Length: 234
Image (cartoon, rainbow, N blue to C red; front, side):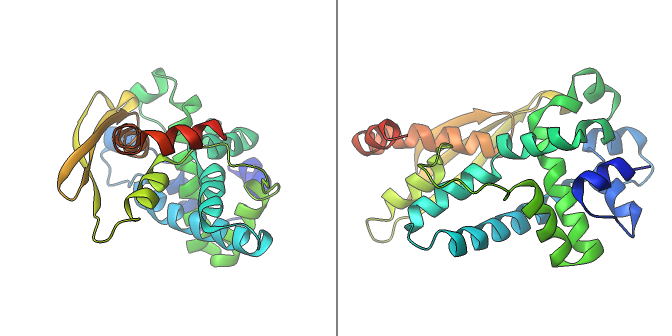
């Protein structure tokens, strides 16, 4: 059933149920109400596996780059846009199990959905074949070309953390303050606090995007000069 997808991944699942779970969007699971699980738990695990494998590869392949550059290059490689590009190469959207509303809303072509599914598949491969299986997929899909130039995907959260931590005893915390809309068009609201004081708010179609928007606002308010200089170097 998933032979074409497995060929693209370069990995064959012994337990096909794991792959099917990775392709099951929450909208489908909610509509079926048959005890089927969505891929959200797998996405959580896959995100961590992806981050570690990419960080390890960058550490080994770019020995002269500072921590800040490595962090931003990793953000480039694991961002939604990068994962959606990998998903497009796999035609992953065609294999997703979506609810009716998400299907009608164009969910098969929504970057956030297919990117999340990539992370879910990585976790499924890890559970099915161990770390080497997940690592192999990441190397084929994400790490074929490691960028060596200036990072293009600006990670506002990382920059905010780096600038704030120049002073001692600083705490940055992101809080989800609201969400609205149907499953296929969710909108999340997030606020970021510095030592308990709100310094930025943001909205986005995913929690990650909302957090980035909140960090962007905080950078403009707290570190306008440093932020402007960093953007100019992109």
